[in-house]
Length: 581
Image (tube, rainbow, N blue to C red; front, side, top):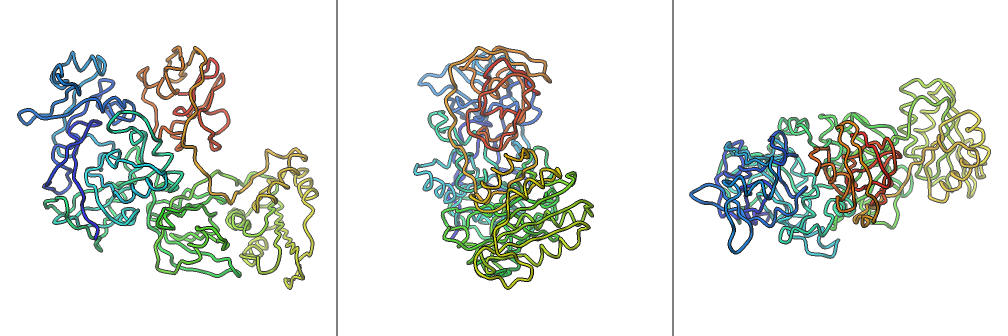
């Protein structure tokens, strides 16, 4: 039975927490005294970034919050501390700068990063699952939760939008919590000793751990209280949570998705239709043909895979998967209607547009899947130019979605289609019993200025890429990959170089950088700038800035980083540089 393990509040934002035995919960409020005090970094309390927090100052673990006559206190973690930083401006300035100020909030909502997030819930078994995969022990206190629970791993994401009873009280689960660099800080030593956002992304396919909640029904809460999901839904809470300033995009939220239909397309190939509960809030609105979704927690250890979206209808999306020996495809082929998965996306690079004078699709096997949505978009736009689809399979049993492709091509004014079956005699009318001439196809497409779309096995894609290079058409090549990517989890050591002049063009700040200044993001923040940033691990791309002049040195191998841009949290100058921020 799911139950509450422990309760914590954090009287001063960013500093050590305080364990509680019992908490009275009131409607719309958080834990009394939680994050009631904050210390600013720049003399203003507008937003979360100006506050002292572990994300930007891991040394906060060396201070000890306390109480005196009911008021919060803060001392150095020393045998004989010099005084209370909250009441001694000179001591506060010594540690946190002359512009630092103490800011109080007494409305039981606290100095949260988001105004609607009054409570945070951490599932210790989800943390344990990550610990097992990493082979290390992770202290759940890294996640600074209010309510620590023991429940099935990842089950907390299935509560999104629902009412959940915690003892006598009822909470609505409003948003998953995207983790930042603060979780990489050892809460005992202050050392940045493991890259938690990157590890979450590597093992679970997203950077979320825990959920935010609001109190819907008052009551007392204590350790050991049972937890049970209810039939109550709080759609209006989700709608608000999705629009809160700086909240992560809906497409990135791990959310429950119901399996509503399964179609066996061919032997060992099935399509699964999933209903997205956030579609009504716009989670599918930004979809671009050819993008993928990630399906998470397919096994108890958190297995996840990416699959190209092969169809979208209203609040449903389709993935089409060939059965193999891997845990992901095995799990997909074991699904039944009515089951629930966890989903993120759609996402991925934009590999499709309507401005090309022609389009060539060269695909093989299950690589036909991204072609479906791209052809659908061309049909809907009444695309007037030539479109050619060349698909290859070993035998007829490998052919999936072909009737759909044929129908779509038939609706185009200049559509052409060819099916190559390379082994045995095909009973499909019009099938060609030999491999296509890749070089001739690519050469013709290059002469037409066509966009070239490719999806298939790795060797197949490599052959086509070589032909495209020879035809000098790389700028028009769009390759859709089957692979579920790995994530970098460690940054390279900052090289001994410099000093270099760094100019932040929009801010009008120019300063000399040296290796001890750290990443460009740390350097900018040390100069008083507040830049968009989240994971601080080179993953989320929130801190991406254009490099106007000079060269940067990336500290990770980030294949998703755009040419001419710097991931500020994972880059340092390689020369004097000018950055567009």
